[in-house]
Length: 278
Image 1 (cartoon, helix red, strand yellow):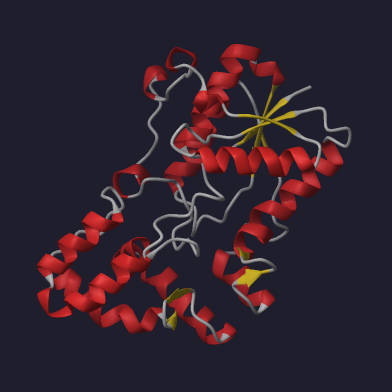
Image 2 (cartoon, rainbow, N blue to C red; image 1 turned 45 degrees about the horizontal axis):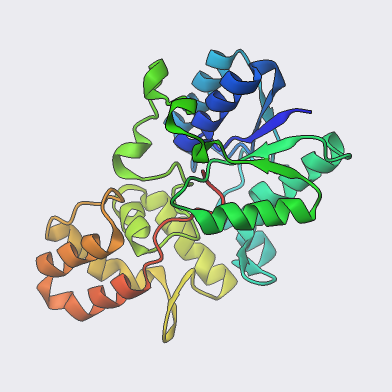
């Protein structure tokens, strides 16, 4: 039996790896990662993955999309001619992570002997329950070290490893241009990653449908450019380090002429994607 860390390269999954290794031994740990191309996954996230693996004396095990080094969340959706599949799962998660993960489990753990480790914490009971149920239905065991007592959790700070610059702007080491993130995230993309913004706009044109929607239907990225320019001019800082409600309240105060439009974004901002990153 091995403890397979669902190793995103984020702070939580890194601390799960450290905590499991301390309790059960590094020799019983597998760091299972789905590598994402360097345009989308920040360099500091890739560095954190390597730093923690080196600290534990382990190699990273990869379960990757066939074209992981060039594929992006937008490109895999454009290839499929849709943003979502089935009951509403965003295709990028399915193609870049879920499918390679299932294939790896079938090939490397056919008897369901391993324990699969996730970085969900006590503030996320629905995610813990849902993941445990999904994996349990397939016959796999799960563990959630971030629910352990605090003295059992090994933090990055305690061993002198930096989580990286991504956490100065973002709350998670998500893909930049996360297709499940809300408008606050996409305002950051508009301000800092014009290449990703333009790729996503082109993807909306190619697929023929918007990434986002509100109560009245689809809302295309291009429709928000004038508003975002007004926010930039008013000095609205692109960050996820404040909650969406507070972020949009500050934006309404700064950009008074667009108050109704900003209120609409606040109402429908679903925050960051938590289903494919820990």
